[in-house]
Length: 70
Image 1 (cartoon, one colour):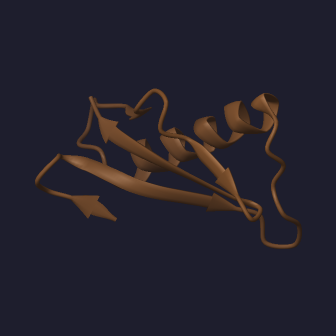
Image 2 (cartoon, rainbow, N blue to C red):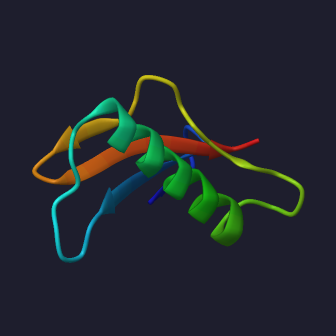
């Protein structure tokens, strides 16, 4: 979801057939997937998707985070 007031996206990443783990290694993979998806689907040409540091949270097999194009 895009939050225009803050110019950020609220993103969630989850696995279809298995819950995602909560380790730091899992966080890194999930952040790469989210930033790549943001760049591909939402960022203007030439911009990249970036996860806002400290916003990635794991709960119930799903990762939630805040991201922006830059």
